[in-house]
Image (tube, rainbow, N blue to C red; front, side):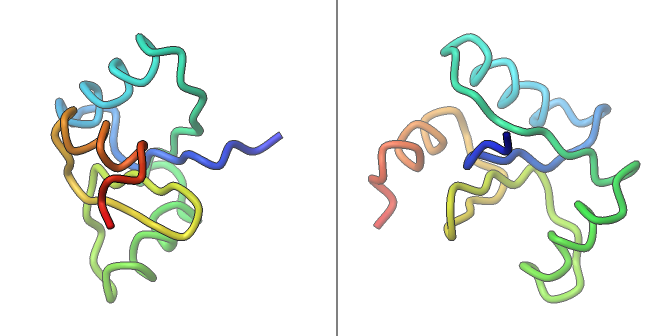
Length: 82
């Protein structure tokens, strides 16, 4: 079953690792997409960012946040980013 929370990044990106580690430490389910090895994931980001690949990007439902700090991610997940 696919999660509603998606993390797009690369295995070598420290910020991607930080976000993944935070989500795992909080027992928050998410799907991870490596934009270097997954062409569909890369295309997903290019569709969002007008042809550019920007990561890490976290998507929840129809909303997304680019390169968030852990604090920004917490607010995003709580819906405080309106």
